[in-house]
Amino acid sequence: METRRLGAGGPLVSAFGLGCIRMSNSTATADEAEGIATIRAALDAGVTLLDTGDFYGKGHNEELIRRALSAGGREKAVFSVKFGAMTDPDGNFGGMDGRPQAAKNYLTYSLQRLGTDHVDIYRPGRLDPTVPIEDTIGAIAEMVQAGHVRAIGLSEVGSETIRRAHAVHPIADLQVEYSLFSRDIEGGVLDTCRELGIAVTAYGVLSYGLLSGNWTRQAPSPTDLRAIMPRFQDGNVESNLKLVQALHEIADTRGATAAQLAIAWVLAQGRELGDIVAVVGSRTRQQLAEALPAAELVLTDEELAAIEEAVPISAVAGDVGMPGMRDGER
Image (tube, rainbow, N blue to C red; front, side, top):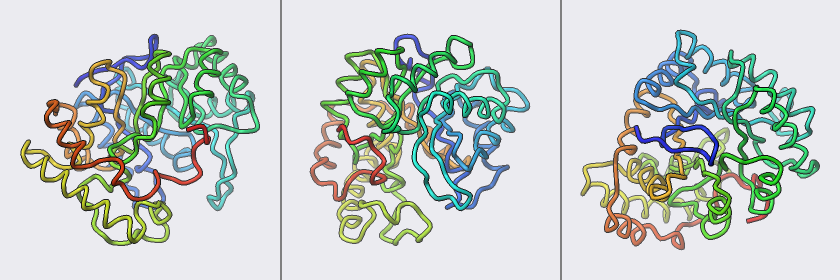
């Protein structure tokens, strides 16, 4: 498994990371035994980066990871943990909490649920507009000094916030949606990260399943978050699936799948500098096995050009991912 370093002084991680959210996602049928087996299979395959959040399944996801590593494996894993998203008992979103005392409180419970004495990368899940980012990062920096956190990350923020946070403490990576269908970090946020020596941890690399090659025109169920995503709406989804079909045709020439090609494209954007990692949300061992070959799929310049021509960003219909979940800087 190829490895890449998150930031100048951050951890060395596998270029392919495992996103664990779907193992605790209430919109899917969670199978704890399968989730545990999938995490263990990923570690056995050389995947070291495990991405989670203290609000994934209201803490369930962190506990699941602890159980997966109960027989050993903590030394192989790099924990990337988000915090700060608040919900009520009915699951209604209550905003972000980036207060310094809250950051330390959330960390305390994450350490307990994960069964560890430190988190490798700790990051606010989104920007709290009521708290200066300097205050939030300053509190996490104190936890770095105390040994409870190894590195600090950010999630879905723009260049100004990145610069302000980095001035307080070196930022290892920015977690951000980035895929063939979501490329708005190019030319702005990505340039800022590279100027400051900050890596990018890309999530949504399969555009919430749209680039998987398995999605059809069916409407998502009302409880599925994709039901409110613009790219899955009538009129948009048909256009986007035509682009996926074009990706299928290129993938066939490499004996790969559309999903593998989409993941490999993201990895290719950071291959020269070694500064982009792809986080893939696999819920089962089968999904993991289908995605993992992308880590070894090196695309030629000609193939990258063909992909760009077949899937131009200007042809993608609908806005990115989850509406209202970015800080508005981009």
